[in-house]
Image 1 (cartoon, rainbow, N blue to C red):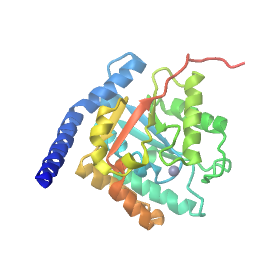
Image 2 (cartoon, rainbow, N blue to C red; image 1 turned 90 degrees about the horizontal axis):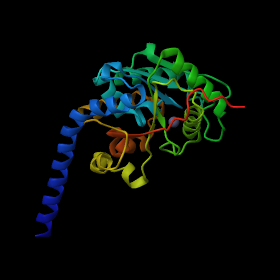
Image 3 (cartoon, protein in one colour; image 1 turned 60 degrees about the horizontal axis):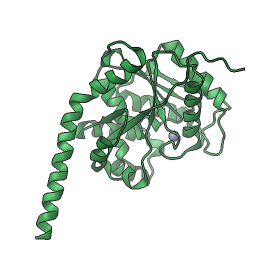
Image 4 (cartoon, rainbow, N blue to C red; image 1 turned 30 degrees about the horizontal axis):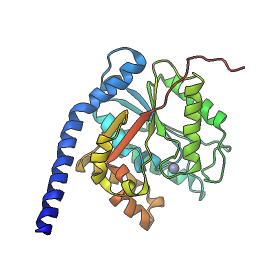
Length: 270
Ligand SMILES: [Zn+2]
């Protein structure tokens, strides 16, 4: 009897996930519109979105942001990547750069839309404290230069807690609070979930769907295969635990974002 009950519960849970996917297909464009309209005050659709994903290292784009990139590309958004280091921790910078280009090609970002920063003050190192003002100036120049209207990056916990990830969040929050971001640009931070939720793969979808967020991007098995193929491009990083991550991480299927609140525009700091 109890086995029968468990079977029914699992079955209903999977049906629920299927329904959420169906609902998500129809509502993602609306969510984007809502976010963009709030910021720009005009009607927008997927093709109007010029999104910039800001990451710290080659492989962040597919480890953490793959569902978002895949879904935005599907909606004909123009998706760009700004990676703030070459990932030179083990002196493999040039190799990792190529892996990043390959991974992005799989996700749908052409090389012409990728910028990789190689700055001696922004080393790939969890112990290095990246300068918030330096990162801020790199990001704001890039946003203004390319007229992006959406910036997506890590939140204050940086998903894995890596210091370089959290430094980017501090820089973007600084830009937001000091009004340095163009008026039609929205800022979104990727929600870090707890350890249990992080490793239950797509079973986390109902909770992600129910909890309040500004944007939720989820991919089906086809999108998952694309994300996995992108992960496999980073051959230099494929240690055994990476395979566990690919199999169990919720970030291979789901991303949720919160808006980073912005202060008054063009605020002068004295
Ligand atoms: Zn990273």
